[in-house]
Length: 371
Image (cartoon, rainbow, N blue to C red; front, side, top):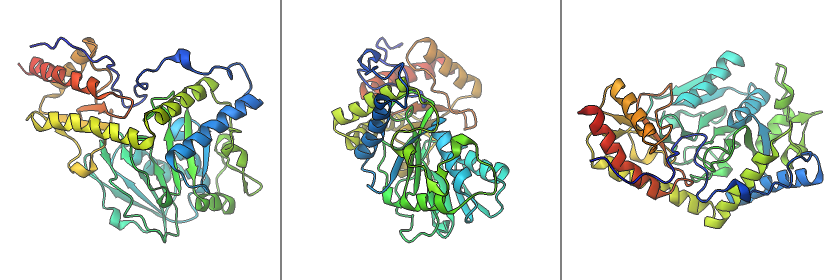
């Protein structure tokens, strides 16, 4: 029978993601709006964003954290364009965004000494093939495949090259071994449900040393430049952003960081997200028509959870449209380059009760399109 109860929040998109529970834009501190981001109040808000990010995540004291343009994509591109080419590069990719970095490295930067280690959607490549004399580029969580790196044990502590990690659907939802990661990028609109257009870049001392010792042979756009006169532009990592940020988005981000503090920190956010994955896993285990895209349980993402369904393409499209029209699940179709299926966000900004309320609707919609 058709369920009667609908999720209180049907926003299950994998980016931008659901706002935190209890979110109310009226509660944002809007004192910076209409002010210059270079004013004392603007700089203070940006510096607070950086300091709180670093403290909540437990990022090492000697790492730099900066706010940069163009979301996670901008953060990844600015470091790749600024620092790659000094060494050979190993690229590990198994979904759309990781493959995009590989394409940029080989087709845009046109680097020759590049090793590709790939896997099909639902699987991870063999990380034991990594050569840590080289720079190593990879995503931590495959947002479009629902497959995550389970840990950083494979990363050498004696590496000569840099580890460059796109972690946009992982930071604040998964344990990050910061000492093993030289460059980490993420965006506000994923795990924290923040607004788009801004990225975070985290640099280890080794990453800073690369920026200060290596000059790439190609020109760099202004928004990519992190050094001046061979020295890191320290202001970027103290709130003096490269270009004008949205102070409304900054206020929204500070609200999200405050919520993380309120629920008990990053460990509580991780626990909540893992609990959400368990809700979905219990459902899948008792149904024979829906399956995780991730083949290995230890590698299943607890944020962007991807599924395959035993339906035709037309039936799948009808199911997604049906759930949308009923107002119970928005934007849950698989990413355009990924295998056809469903993708349901399970990060901490999603309450388990909303997932539990959604699941009977999945049963109903499946029955409707297959009868």
